[in-house]
Image (cartoon, rainbow, N blue to C red; front, top):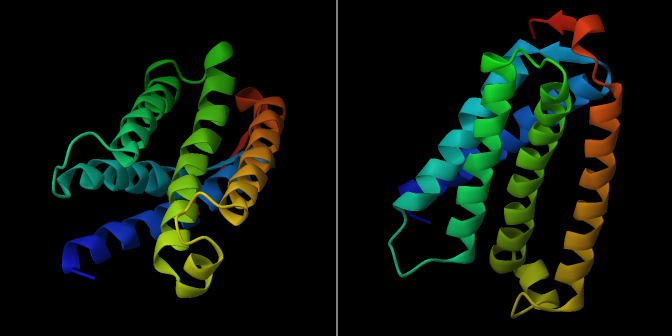
Length: 162
């Protein structure tokens, strides 16, 4: 693995960890400024660095990157322009969850491509184990997104620094 790929992978894994902490806080009707800001910075950096790999035409990864950046733009608008007022509250909460999902989605694809045991289960990446993993992730994140949108109430939120 070259150094740029290692850097991009590290950004992705750190973004997933920070995103998990930020979403966990949202589900408890809290905002962790540290984890949320770390997630937003790392998620944006992950998506942007994905475009610096050698260009061989538009790939599914690039499409996911564009979608991720669009979702993150709405999250930033919701948080910093509209102060999570009215419908921007659920856009913010669900956007954080959707952004995290896209990182996990790509992580699953990469795991099945790069980890020998998983590659053995799905050599082409189109087999049932990949589909099951992706379906399980999608169902989990849909449930998390709905829960986040319902539970997160910025007027009653507790802001924590960690």
